[in-house]
Length: 80
Image 1: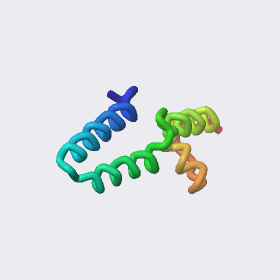
Image 2 (image 1 turned 120 degrees about the horizontal axis):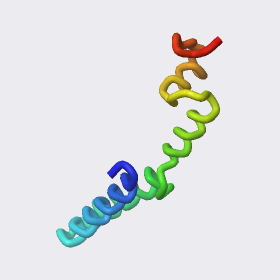
Image 3 (image 1 turned 180 degrees about the horizontal axis):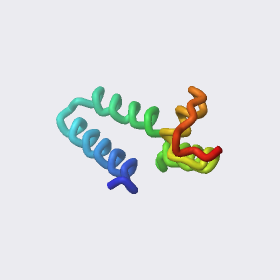
């Protein structure tokens, strides 16, 4: 599910939209569609791209790279 996480969320959103339309709640169906389009525009998660960029540029896990970049933190496992 991790690899297809965004696709699973889109599938669930379309199921919810279909159910809402079947129940006659078209306003909520439009709201669900709008929020999915706004919040999940890239179908392939951009967080994976950011994760890879942080990992490559700092040579460490992005969680540590974030603190290193924004808080100038030095970790005990770093060389030099």
